[in-house]
Length: 523
Image (cartoon, rainbow, N blue to C red; front, side):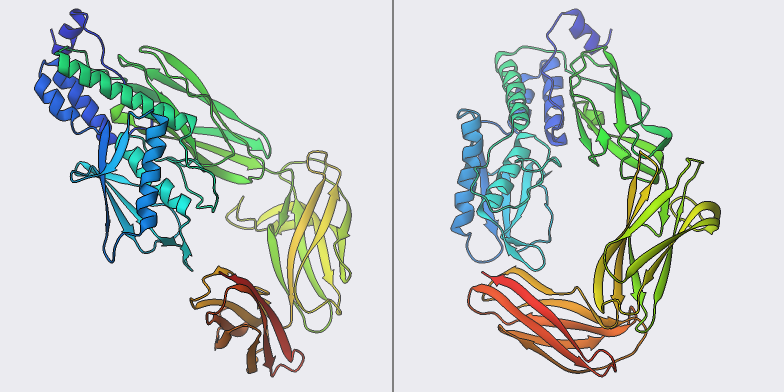
């Protein structure tokens, strides 16, 4: 008779199980401690559990240069209060000589979070004082949240992709709202504390247990939902089974809001459940796939990926799709064509067109010919439907203009479609203005734009920046048409609104001058 079967025969209690969303280091300590208790090695169990943080947990704050700013020390105390308050004093984080958490303060980091991680028995967290390019100062609340996340990882809670939570993605918003654990986060923390205290009590009292071992069986993990009409919500089921001896805790994480997942009720030992998963295809066209992550408390299957594949057919296609950039002729009319087609005979009729501005017209004619649509074919394919001829008059305004042509159809499922156009004529600036946003008043900062003409080479004769402490300089950039990349440098100055303009004179016979406004705020 095996050791485990003997323990079961002796009717020993099954040890505590952990929640989903738990760090692998804590799973390791939990498993080793439960095995030691099952074998009567109580001293070994106590040693193992001493490495599982709980009660009073020490941390250290280090910085490679200068001293640790007082804002960080205060943020760490606030982060400690988050857990102390939530657990009614059961958890205490404090600076000390035997740290389980190392908080390294760095000067700056790129956008995005760097989650804390376990390494050699400690949690390592790197927390920047500024972030992004150009750099922005980290709000105090963001520093508190980052340190609290490191504390949560030390307790065993894995980081998540949820926004506006301690263990999730921090939006780094400047807000006075207090940092608090969400209900789900607090539930996981309490579950971990309870499991640890049960094991500590068993080790102290010399009580043997049967190791808790939930065991996941999952099938299938790659699902083809077939071909559907855009807007449909196809579903399919995966079967989850708990083949272990303790409750199997589950949690879902989606890679897209279009995914539909069920509740996260645990499965009891021996329980099997068919779970529906689905995709809302609204806004998606062509073949695509999305991933669903299933988190469990099965140590050997902590994170599992399920792939959902589908082909979504629109009621009709307009080629080109998206925002179409059109370079207009300097002289005379410009004509551009769009093709509207369907995959099957839906009886599509375009009833009317409605251009958004003067100088823009559209005509409809039937179409039967080859179309290259890379979403649905690798080469030109014969299609039938309509050709929409969009005409820009000779007196269409110069510069870059956003406009559209609204198509009205007879299909109730998709009665209208807006052809989106970015029309550029003559010399244009992209972007059309220089926006500095909020920049430190005493720090230099640079923004750039391109001045181009689609067909004509030209030279900048004179260039100046008016208003504010700005400097401007340019270099040739013919990566798209003919033109220059212009850099505008804010030289630093007093706090307040930034306002001005860049005036550029050229040798182009028709477009002698172009003006680009400047705005922003020096803080």
